Length: 97
Image (tube, rainbow, N blue to C red; front, top):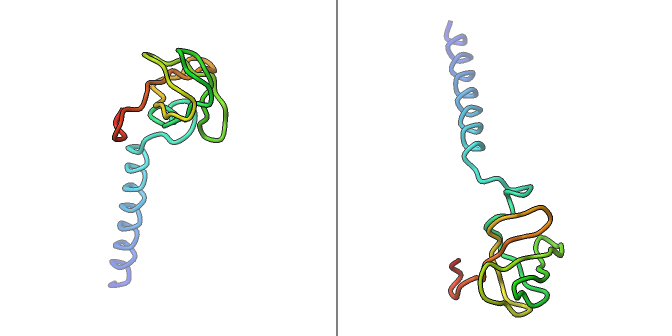
């Protein structure tokens, strides 16, 4: 009789672990696709005034800067994606957006 209780307890613990993993995965930020790029830091390859090219995730992308201008080598933050173009803002000093 004790082995039945042990099997039931092990099964309940297993289900609790699986349920916890599912809930945790639903709360995590998406890591792939278009939505996964928003908030990422890219490096300007050409001057952005306001259009130019940036490098992110090993790829070159056309980008449109929201305000001001950026020199090659400066970092920008991706704010949204419109088709095959990235909308970016200049990364502020200290790592803040």
